[in-house]
Amino acid sequence: MIKAAPSKSHRSLHRKSSSSASPSCPSPLPIHRERVTALAAGVTATATPPGTMMHMTFYWGKDATILFDGWRTATWTGYLLSLVALFLASAFYQYLEAFRIRVKLLAGAKPASLPPPASDTRAPLLPPSAFAGARWTARSATAALFGVNSGLGYLLMLAVMSFNGGVFFAVVVGLAAGYLAFRSSDGEVVVDNPCACA
Image 1: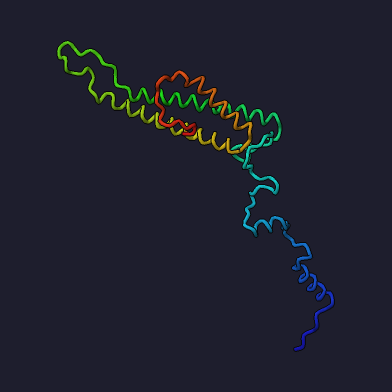
Image 2: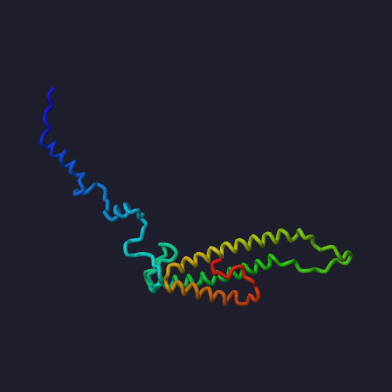
């Protein structure tokens, strides 16, 4: 059996399909050369655009990324509102620290001495086990407050690591104002760790 030669139109269709695989013709999928180059270099799709690197020295200006990509300031209003929020968070950090110290002092305090009953001068009015549950609850509350306060302190530290001068001053002034408002009358209370983020 003899096969007929392919027609001229069939040959031109075959030629078009083979030439579509060449790099000069557009492919059916939109592939951007920049993205292919970035992926080949090991950069993920969430990388910062060229020219917008994270600052490694202090800078001044309204354009800042604070904590995550969703908290970017591009206007003066947004920037100033962010500074006020950081100031309030820093003052709240000091309030929580003062509250935690008060709870810790109350948890460690011994029950007030009560006069012994008239019948027996050595018998306590309440057995010592009556205070064990209350102390455990107070110690658990102190630990929970410490965890929340540490988390807030580390978030403030990461905000300062945006290296924006205004963010730095908002956090430092907020910590100082919070200390003045909530902790300056602590007296001789010994703090476990003087670091602002612990």
